[in-house]
Structure formats: structure tokens, C-alpha cells
Length: 153
Image 1 (tube, rainbow, N blue to C red):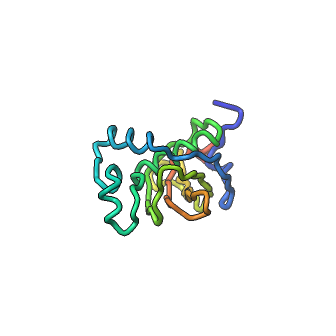
Image 2 (cartoon, rainbow, N blue to C red):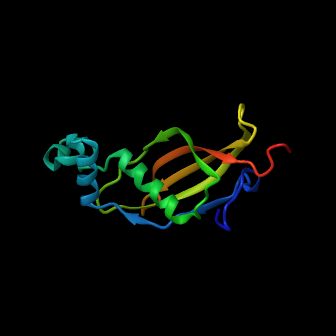
């Protein structure tokens, strides 16, 4: 356990941080298409994309989600007391293009005891990803399974 490790009780509703930024590249989009098998033309065919309302190829939504998740892990301390429990309300309200730079604001918005496991609680962490223009390009409610320091309290 690292010195920075936090338990369920240590998290406060409203606490937040902002990650470093990262630019989405053409290579990211192509590599993601290769890994995922998602070769939809609005991601990979510029001529097709010109005929669509957005007029440009866009990054995959789940690419944006994956990069955002990585930025969060790079910007926070290693913590063996928390792990992903699930995700709610994943939305991509604006497109991400090759050349866009994104960052994530992370905020604890809820805490509750786990209904079955008294040794753990559930944290809700909102993750709002924005581009260099301040536009929200992804929004996620991330539920975290967090170890309690004193489960009998």
C-alpha cells in the first residue's frame, strides 16, 4: 500500500482534480480502429465524412473514453483500495477530431455503503472530458468499489 492510498472514509463529496492534457492523433484513431475492429467510415474515410453533417472524420467515442481513463490514472496516485465497479451515463456530446487536446475533470459526487459487502463502499466519480475549446466531449459516471478502513464502524 502506498503512502497516498485512501480508504472509502477518506474521500469527500465535492473533492476534485483535473488531469494533464493529451492530444488525440491520427495514429490513435487508426490504431484504435485496428484494435477494436471498428472501421466505420465516419472514423476512417475522409471522403465519406465530408458527406456527413460533421464534415470531418471523428475519433471513436470509446477511444476518447479510453484516453480519458488513462489520463485519470496518470494524474492520480496508485491506490489498491479502489477498483472499477461500473460506469453509468456514458455520453459523447461533441466530436473529437485528430489534433484535439483533451483533459478530464474528476469529481466525487456520491458515497454510499455497499448494500451487501460491509467491508466496502461505493463512490460515484463524475469524469468530464473537455477539448481545448472547453467543449465537453465525454461525460461518465464512474462507480468505484472502495475498501473501508474500519468496516465495523
